Image 1: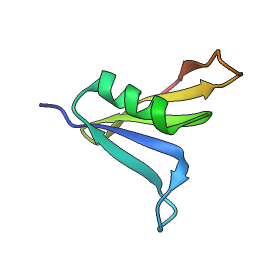
Image 2: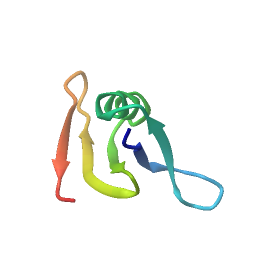
Image 3: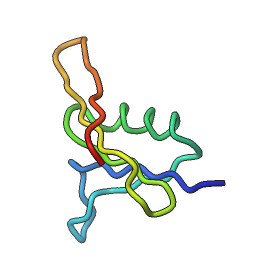
Image 4: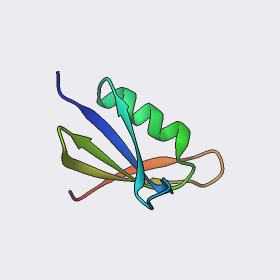
Length: 70
């Protein structure tokens, strides 16, 4: 089973690194990100390799995610 992680680029640990949360799969990782990021960036990782960068645009009730270049 591949290891999926989401790095929350606006949340940092005590070492100044983006907080990473492990998830069972990509949909779960995206749900975790949607809950924990009100606006800003996150990175999707699989087996230690970044597979995408996400940017959440928030405007009132209409939020959406933009998938950026890896």
